[in-house]
Length: 79
Image (tube, rainbow, N blue to C red; front, side, top):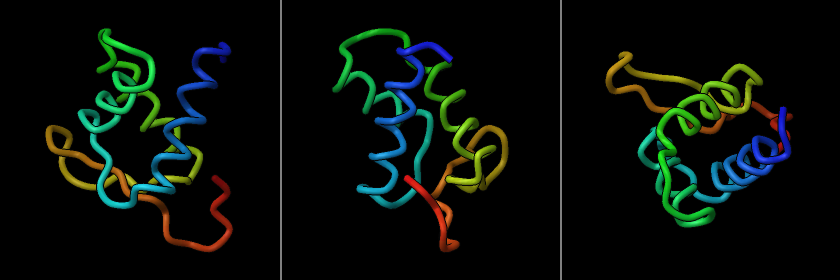
């Protein structure tokens, strides 16, 4: 994982803990644009959300075309 990837993951982890609710690719894109500036963030946002879900920090819900992620509610989640 590159330093850029780690920076994005750290930001998304922090934001998911601070700003509860549903996280979508679009919401993560807006976060990245606000922090890192304009760019094509869609694929990176989707991959980062999937990565955090695989780590158990986020829970994926909904169908493929309307999926969203929420902070995993079990104790022991380390942000």
